[in-house]
Length: 579
Image (cartoon, rainbow, N blue to C red; front, side, top):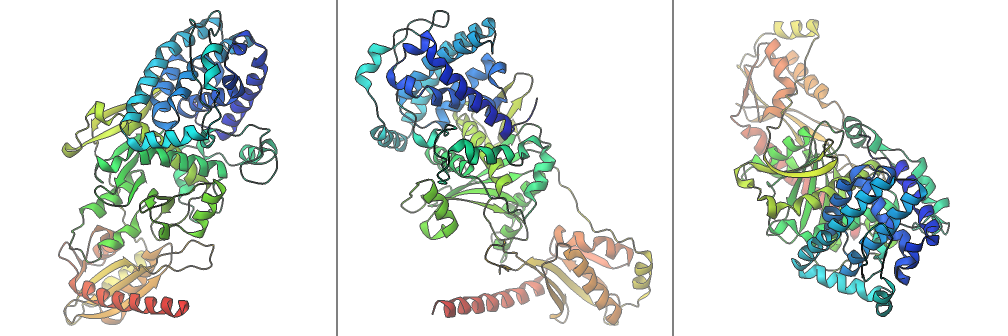
């Protein structure tokens, strides 16, 4: 099974546009309503986009199982329009499938199979849509507002639609509502949505064809791209449109009303080596969001934060170690000028607390920052699957409290997405350890005499929540603050602030300098396995006892005082700037 490709998708939509224009000469097309004929390309393009986006199938590969899956699972929970739009899907697709048969894109046997499945899927699609719609009054209000914006000649629709084709289905009667503009992709000859004034085919359509294709890469390569904190390739306007569209679906679904932060949805994207985990933020609160954790290392950091003691004075600092992509529903003051520029381009407006949608990428060592191209692309795929997976919660009855997860994955055998309630598999924990192989150095350290006071040390590395930004366009870094203190005398011996990508080198330098001057300590206490991983191998090879789990109270006291003073000074500086 091949992976998703922007280039392939663009080619499919281009072909569909040409075929839809050519379809005007077909008899089946001429009996459709005026509005259906006018918007035929939009309906066909959206279906083709979903068939490729969720099943990687171009029109010549369309299968009946994929058709059923898209219509009954993807449409009802992602396309927020009036019911009359759903009622026109069957006749429009029936005409289009018949056209593909006449043109030779698909065989007559396949056309017959697709037509039969279409007649079965259409009523099920409408039923699921109505059930999902009735579950939320906000959905009804949205659709009523949308209906007021559409140009519908509903009096003439029923009389114009009587039969679709000779071979594909019985006589039907449908009412059509033009899809909402926000769900419609621009035709190649439409004005480009980026506002350049050029036609779409000469502007962002070409940029899509020329762009990098992270979807064609393996999951490990996507993870590498996501790690590129200096990536400056910005999301396209089309990507922003898709992100805000799926955010609307999440808002309607409101998973924070029935899910806790620990209730994980596990998604296995095609060709990935590790799962993606989705956590719902905001149960019982005024602000909401979805956190997307990419792989085992990221979810282990998430659990580290969840399992920390509520009394931990530096619990908030663990948030600076998180590696995830987020979709937030916050307040207007949380939205920056860059966010507002995107909203203005999309003609989106939010009002009220907890209603403002924005997206961020979190990576250890950096402040939350704006999405880049690759991150936006991955977040679109994950959030779309998250919405569909959550729509199955009631039916699957996932027992989160007893260690189950809602798993969504693509079955290559059945060629469709599946959803299951399963026991959360063990999450591998990769133990990281700095290995010291400089035998000459180790030998010299080990020859050092013991400290005459049998010194006991405390060592730790903590993120300092004071962002350092080189310029207004660069991503602010959050440095490590390395501390070495005398546990007995309760004094600091050395400290160091580092932005280095290899802070372990700074740690070793501090330890070696101290031992060279004062001798080898009797023991070194560390807070947790993170700090332990930096010096464990060094201590083993230099005969220094390493103690974990008994706390570092002296560091806690010193760091708390230092941090309080530092934050006070920063606040004063900010106040002086405003005055």
